[in-house]
Amino acid sequence: MRNDLIIGLDIGSSFVRAVAGRQNNSGKLEIIASGKANTTGHILQGEIVNINKTSLAISEAIKKISGALDGKNTNYYFSSNLSGSHINVQPYTSTKIRKNPREAVSVQEIQALIEDAKKPILEKNPILLHTLPIGFKVDNLPTTNDPVGQVGQKIQAELMIITANPDKYGLLVQCLLAAESEHIKKGNVYFSPVAASTAVLSSEEKEEGVILVDIGSGTTEISMYQNRGLVKSLVLNWGGDRLTEDIRIGLNVSYENAEALKTTFGSAISKLIDINEVVMIPGIAGRKPTPVSVKNLAIILEERLKELAAKIIAEVSQVGDPQSFKSGIVLCGGGAQLPDIAELFQKVTDLECRVGVPMVVQNSQVSEEILDPSYATAIGLIQVYYEQLNEAILSEEAEATTIISQTGAEINQGNNKDKPGIKKIFTRVVDVLMGSNEAEGEY
Image 1: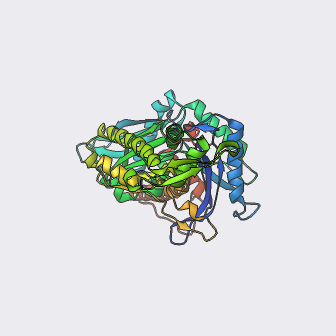
Image 2: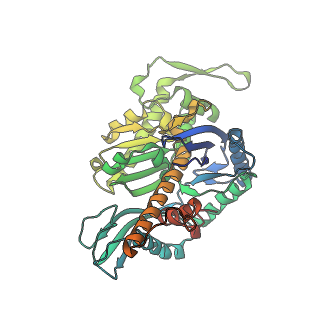
Image 3: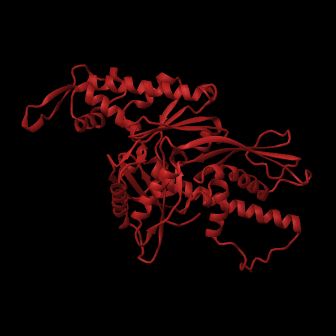
């Protein structure tokens, strides 16, 4: 368990959401502060179009949580996300013929296999965000998530490689660097679904098969997990802004009023709305208010969301039978706040569906707002840090055990002179598991 305070910075098409959190004594994530700033018009479909205003929004969101950070001489680090249709997620296979087939597979061997897989990828695209293991296979043994200790002549790693457009990535880094302050700086960049999945999905769901759908204002990210591994992920240029535009056109109201109607009176299932329910929209420049049917509002939302649900099933069907994802669909993001959306998706897809709420301990000083699906990515950015750190420590311990067992060396418990520090462990081991400094995943 670590007490490092980490800041998660979710940079979206409507808001920058910042949260500060740490692990408590029970090992659970505790959120101690949150804040957000508007980015409407500065980021479109997940891609930055105004560097100056995006940087200011990031600074504003961080400033809102800075009062909860202790100590003027302490440096705090934030991890942030990257999304957009420029993200490329593809499977990759790395194979190696082992020198001694009778020797047990080691942690170092797995790390080297993953590291070797990065080299040809980096030659084509220097922005390698993640190298995620899906499974390993030694000779004809069954595929496993943990091949350490197995014996055989050939070892094969199935990986999911996630890369980003260098120009788009460069814009994000430029904004993040501009938003740094004296004591709040640096951090890793993660693909948004990697973070969100950590906050709202359980290990059991990933094992049995689950589809994570993150509905943002500018994009929708679809990620499919089976046997605990990411098997497919894609970003659609489809988000809540499209719903707002449909309302604007269909009900002949301003964009601002359309957004207000969606968030205040919207529903994903029109049959639940009374046909006589009406809301009055303020008139322009003192003109008299205009009545709007809430039933018609729900019809517009329902029809467009049915299209999204059908698109998701079509994408899932390219991987396999949708019913093989036994844990169904988990919705998160701001769009998942729409009432009755889980019921609609379940009806259209014939899969179990729930809304994913971040699994955190809430500090009494923090707004209830963080306990909704729109904060999944921001909170997940903190959670993924701790998960990687724990994996790094376990890997380091396993590596030390392997070396000792092979050499018969004894440990001097009182001598920590050569023991690697936690920062060294995090940089060296987690970089192998999840990303690469060569790819500027840490800037």
